[in-house]
Amino acid sequence: MQSNLREPDKTTLRQLRNDGWIPSVVYGYETESTPIAVKERDLIDTLRETGKNGVIKLNVDGKDVNVVLNDYQSDVLKGNITHADFLSINMTEKLEVEVVINLVGESPGEKQGGTLQQPIREVTIRVKPSDIPESIDVDVSELEIGDTLLVSDVRAKAAYEILNEDEDTLVLVSAPRTEAEMEALDEATDSGEGAEPKVIGDEKDE
Image (cartoon, rainbow, N blue to C red; front, side):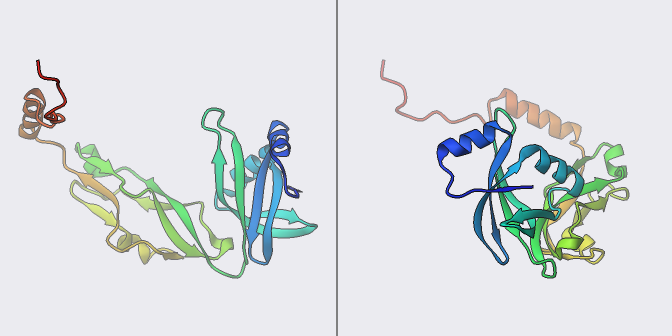
């Protein structure tokens, strides 16, 4: 799933993208920084199968190399990938990756009118490449209004090292606003409180 490039110029890069290839670079474990190109369709299909943190095999200079997608850029308007960075890895050594937090279940506190909030949507873990999870499930089915789940609450159950701080909040259920709080908020809005202050000197003297 790749094609080696040698000092590609702008014309070559443009033509590659027009033909459905993604100009890329692979570097890392036992691999010098090497410009390559991969078929966008092949990469998308592979990521759907392995997940964004999955291990991918690339053939670089005739040798199969285990890599992970380290970074990529995309065209905001067209949505296609315009460049990709692949990190060559040692399958026996742990690496640091960001993994999405997936909330599972329905919170009783939310059913009672509370608001379920997720301040952190990803955590950084240290794990062997073969054990990288696609996501981390966090059960919220016992969270009442006012309850929180911290990193420390899920750390002991994890089969990998979570590098975030123990006190980092993953999920919380906040209480619904009281009628008095809503009225105070409406009054503040009606009175103009919170509006941007006028800067003296902005208006010309009449």
